[in-house]
Image (cartoon, rainbow, N blue to C red; front, side, top):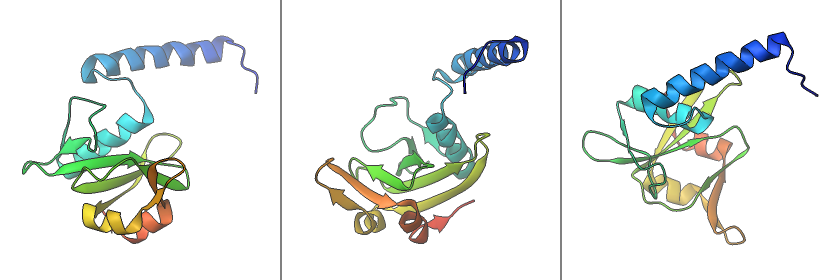
Length: 138
């Protein structure tokens, strides 16, 4: 669909820019679906998000130091690079970025559910398989 920045689009664009700038100032990160999912999980599970967004293996910690890898997916498959976490959390958001659901599984279970895809050097499982083997949190 071609987009011409007419008044209605221009107003939405200006509002979005302000919201994104405000969000970045508060959180120090860009407003993107993956980070929104992390914030939902941190709030629901009382976790602390780690500072380094490129940290290998996990995105958040609980009060006892357990590590949580958070994956936000709308695609059929969930990919992992490694198992350097204690819990895997799958998050689904709707098109308005509202929370649809949160599922959590421990590392031992994840290692039995995910299959190494040699071609891509990643571990992969379908969302359905992840959900069937996880605890539904919300």
